[in-house]
Amino acid sequence: MKFVFQERKGSEAVVIPKTAARLFHTILVHLSEGEMVSVTTQHREISSQQGADLLNVSRPYFVKLLDSGKIPHRKVGSHRRVYAKDVLRYKKSLEAARVRSLNELKRSQLERTRKLMNEHTRDSLIKGFERIIPTLNLPDQDDCHVLAAAIHSGATTIVTFNLQDFPDRILKTKGIKAQHPDNFILRLLDIDAQAVCEAAIEHRASLKNPPVSLPSFLDTLKKQGIPKTVARLESLMH
Image (cartoon, rainbow, N blue to C red; front, side, top):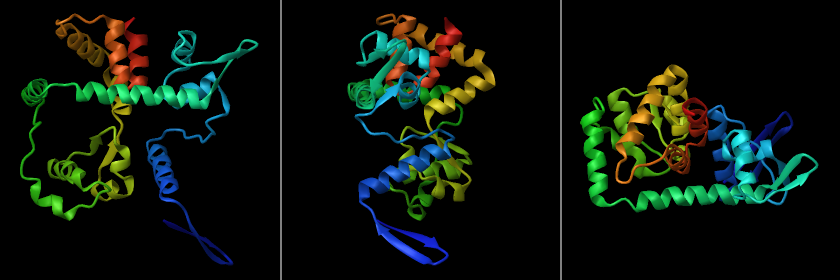
């Protein structure tokens, strides 16, 4: 990929590797979501607050992870220090666990989930959007049906973990934005925390085979990739 830097005296073209271009794109996606972005080397020691920022969790929760031995660290006086590579390794293990949990779902479970979603979500089924698909262009063409359905239904937000597959520059032209599920649920909590907590309580109560404790329920949600939501729910539900 080639970048062109324009200055008063002229312009300079710089060719960068595809991996660097993807990193740059990911940074822009997070910035467009209003999130802070920092770049550090894996072998650098960072503070507990910086580690919490890498995982998108609160500092008290991150300290609990350190004290439980889930992430290696050392103490300098009263301060905890941790290598960025260890935090990133832990984050990668959470993502892998989330993928495994999805892959372990049986076909019957997926069908039941789909049926329940269709029955309980108003206007969840969108039809007639197929004609729009050929007019769209996304990094992954297999995602075009999602954007087409959003356009056809008049949606303003696509909630997805894969923000990089829905570039803001493309979605803006359609009056749509992509939002991470963690940020989406946090917004719902800001609007009506009681309703969200009641929904979480009702959902946990429906898990009867076997029953699930509140800590286990919240831990499962965290592994699904919504740590900031879990941190907020912990403060509200305990």
